[in-house]
Length: 508
Image (cartoon, rainbow, N blue to C red; front, side, top):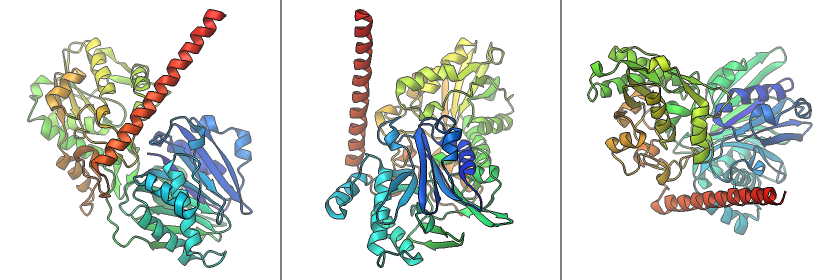
């Protein structure tokens, strides 16, 4: 889950890209980067941290040009806080390309081997996004006639990328001297939308991960980039589009609607806010079958993503809705913080209780999902400490039992609290008196109610069915082993650092 932007404008785009990244900051807090182009020369600045920390006035001044792309990174592969993994990535051959990617390739290792043995291309990091960039660069060279590009060549290259790459990818890229390219994987797993803005100097175009970026920057949403589609905006700001995957099928990640996207976004024609309201309605129907309404005094959301669902649930069952937690806006989203210890530490820094909403009451807490269980356990403890007589828990999504391989940071089964546990066992693990999960069919209906033609979703983290069809038990075991090795290495580094500090103190 990263945030990507691409702007082709009639005036300098550096401020537009910065403002867009601020709007998409929720999609990645690890790193940020902007690349602009002027006179066929790329200008880049990127680094680790939040957008506001990466860019200073001097950095913005060094990003001239009327075309650019931007990226905020969420660590799904590789080491967190490694500045070498900041995007956009750049390659100078064959034409000079910069690329920003949201998603995760599932055949990265195979592609790396092919590029080393066959394509003679060097991959400098362990990022799948750099692999994707080099795949695009190689296919552009393979399809180009001589040293010039045309529309046929560009679209044929994207078609070749679709044939070669597996997994989830929404991409914005710039080709020096030619223009901006945007495309989406044949399943449309990760979102990508584009829009336009009419100015006195001509039309401008903006591509973004979520429609909210277009809204806030004053662009009119045109539509979502279709699965398998490529859209190219040339240097004269002319728009060209083509379907580059013959068997494309829209199967968006359902977790975008549950948690990842902002509620004011519209993804693939569905309002995220409206979808979450529907989730609350369906969850209320399930709740009524398991917990008597007269046993609940108040419904309290766990901010922020669950608010619409909790509000609609409370209205449907006729129980007061109250805000019982105050959120510290200066603490990052715990779900996308690397490291279990960091997540657990941050929960109580992030939330504080409004004690009078809990004291002496039987409370129903509503959250959008339960992934690792760390946040849920801490919050239940906080509710009891504030004086709650009973603490019930409801999740607007089903149990997360399977790894996600398409760009969400929950890749190992042992980190998922629902893996191998029943609902009753999970309730005991988080300390709740009762736990109610949304049914998967009801979750899908929450979205399909708003767009009946949307028949397929990626729901792999709930049911283990991976839409790309290439995920095997061996693949899942391999990524789990890799992640375990990375965690072990990080622990060794922290242990060595603490020992060095102790040695310095003892010799000081």
